View 1: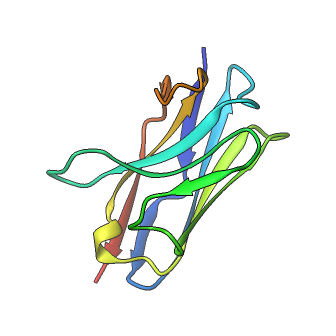
View 2: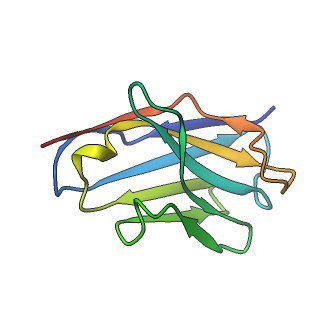
Amino acid sequence: QVQLVESGGGLVQAGGSLRLSCAASGSTLRFATMGWFRQAPGKEREFVARINWSSTTYYADAVKGRFTISRDITKNTVSLQMNTLKFEDTAVYYCAADVGHNGQYDYWGQGTQVTVSS
């Protein structure tokens, strides 16, 4: 059973930076596509970024140029560096793993809160 645990959330002023981390345990996710999603209060969960086994990345337009997703296969972790944060980036951020490479995320973390003050 795969477990994903996010960390690194917190309160930051607009324009600041945060780095989120996701640690996987229970199984290697070396070949999984790893993604970050977020859900703001009263809104649907939305895609933020993903990285596949060969480190090819893809970003939502809202975060392109500000966020960077990366992974460390040896440590079974994935990170999300968030720069130039905006008030609208406030949300609970979730890490997820797509092990079947079908666009369906099979495992999810519990989420970490990111709050950006304006």
